[in-house]
Picture 1: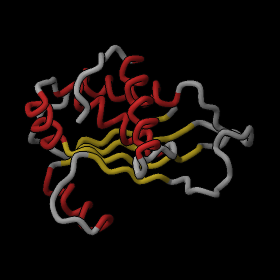
Picture 2: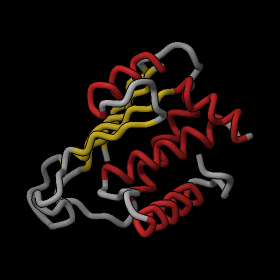
Picture 3: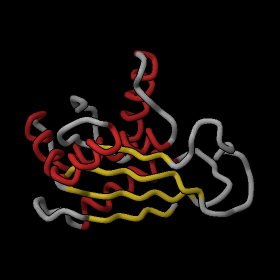
Picture 4: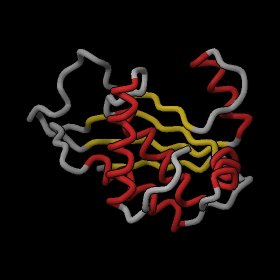
Length: 160
């Protein structure tokens, strides 16, 4: 797995421990999946202003959100689980508003580490084709989120 992390915000300190945790979350979300090549994910940490711009441009929603995912593999494309060529498999981009993550962590009464891990796995699952448009999809996504978080040693708490 190749994870490219870009910290494009300076409002909240994001040290090596947090970056390492997010890398572990991405790896855990990919565990058990096979790709024809090395999966590549881009993780971009931004402030609320940048997130609001992206949210407006890509979702038509005014204001910031906590996490956006931009999958590179669309439904109907070649199956990324099929054995194949060994080239890189670009899964997509995850963008997280770190100030929004901090505010949500405070609101839910848990750590910034837990919130960033949750937002990272949520974004990763969207890259892997999970969604929450129906109650069934929502339940499956929440189940998988709990599995991934447990896999990196983060116990079950209230989901954001």
